[in-house]
Length: 404
Image (cartoon, rainbow, N blue to C red; front, side, top):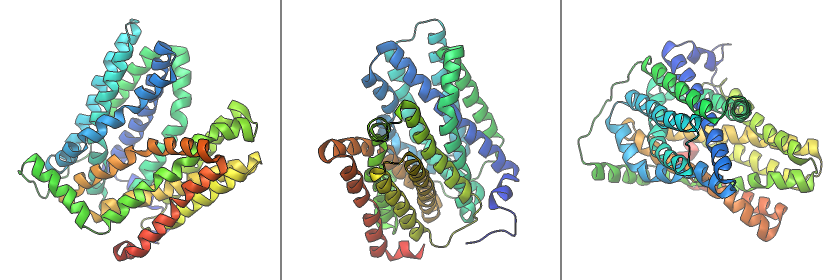
C-alpha cells in the first residue's frame, strides 16, 4: 500500500483543477440523478397509485441501457470522451425540462414518464463507459483507484441525501419544480465538464460498428483476467439476496417498524460512504484481486450474522459493515477493469461491465424468491454461497488475477 507522505492521495487529486471540476460535476450529477429518480417514482405513484408502474418507471432504463450498450462502447472508443460526457449531461436536461413543464401545467401522464425513462436508459448506456474511460485518461491508471473512491463517496452521499432532499422539495415545491431544478443541475454538470481539458485519443479506428463490437467482445473473452472479473461482477447478484429482506426484518423480526427500516437503510448507506471515504486515503493497493475476496467475505459474513440477529443494534452494525465491504469491493473491481483494459478498448470493456451491473436488480428478485421458498435465513446463506466461494475459486484458477 502506497501513501504520498502524510498527505492523503485524495487531497492531491482534488488540488488539481481539472479533476476538481470533474469531481464537482460528477457529485452534482449523482445528486441530481437521485432527485430525478425519486421524482419519477412519486409522479408515477400519484398518477396510477400502483407499485407496478412505479417499479416499471424506475427500472425500465435498464432495458434500453442494455440495448444501446454495444453502440455506446464503440462510440466511447471512437470519439472524444469529454465531449461525449458533455453531450450526455445536456441530454438529461432535454429529458427533464418537458416533464417539469408538463407537471407545472398539470398535463403530465404516465406515458410521458415511460418515454422519458426509456430515453434516460439509452443515454445512461453512453454515460457509464464514457465517465469511467475519461476518468482513467484524466488521472492515469496509477491513480484511478483513488479517483474511483472519491467519486464513489460522492455517489454514496448523494444516495443518502438525495431521497431526503427530494421528499422535502416535492412536499414544498411540487414535482414540476423538482424536474426544472434537476434540468438546471444537469446543465451545470455539462458546463463544468467543459472546463476539464480534453484528452486526445491515442488511436482512432474507422472500422464498422459491427466489427468494433465483435472486437470488443473478443478482446474481453481473450484477455485475462477480464473473464474472471466478469464472473466476480455477477456474484453481486446472489450477494444482494439480503437487500429485499430488510423491510421484513424491520417489521416482523426486529419489530422496529417503518422508522426502524429507514435507519437500517441509512446504516447500510453510511457503511458505503465510510468505505468509499476510507479508500480515498490510498494511492494504490498491490493485491487488488485478494481484496475482492476479503471484501466479499466481509459482506457475506456480516449479512449472515444480520440474518440470524434478533438484536437491533447488532443488526445495524452488520449493515454498516456490509456497506463498508460492498463499497470497497466495487471500487477495487471497477479499478481492475480500468487498469487492465487497453486504452483503445476501454470504452467497450466498461460498457460490458456496465451491462452486468445494470442486472443488479435481478439479485433483488432472487432474494425475494429464495426467501419465499426457503425462509429468510436460508435465503441469505444461499446468497452468500454464491458469492465468496465463487470469487475464491476464480481467484485460485486465474494466475493473472492473483498477480494484480
